[in-house]
Length: 211
Image 1 (cartoon, helix red, strand yellow):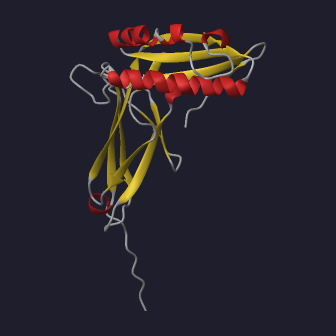
Image 2 (tube, helix red, strand yellow):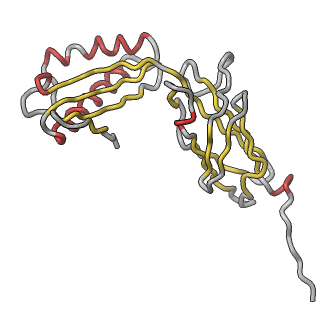
Image 3 (cartoon, helix red, strand yellow):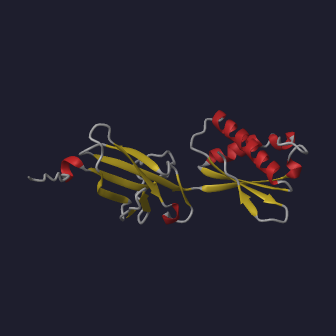
């Protein structure tokens, strides 16, 4: 009686990954001419594999997985944003998922860019008492804010100071929705990232997560 052992062949059974972390200067999510790689950026797989980009921002996983020969396999990588240069933020999805095909190489790209931060600080008096809508005189300033954001790629940081966390979160969600609608109406020439924090009077600020 004999035993047959099937060994995977790297060229035909494995799927390799070719990746790049790049400086997305125009924040469009694609590497264009004149956008260099970002060195020493760390990328991790779901299985715990850690990879560091080289001096040109490149990374390579020679045999990332053995995909199903019929339907392929999903593979995810996540960029550690703490490994990016100071002030840089991602302009692409994170984590990113690609479909691996048996015997073929797949590409991963992570874009990041340094951008201007625009702050909008709000307090109770900017809103209609007890409601989440801005007073008319403040609402009229949204157009000026959009014009400021259009001048160059920016991150918008919303800050609210008030006495109620729940009302503060509602107000921030409402103004975020208003800004996003106005941004789309103006053409939205780049993906606007909006951060938000609630500051209860006398307490530490709490970051708001938008679902």
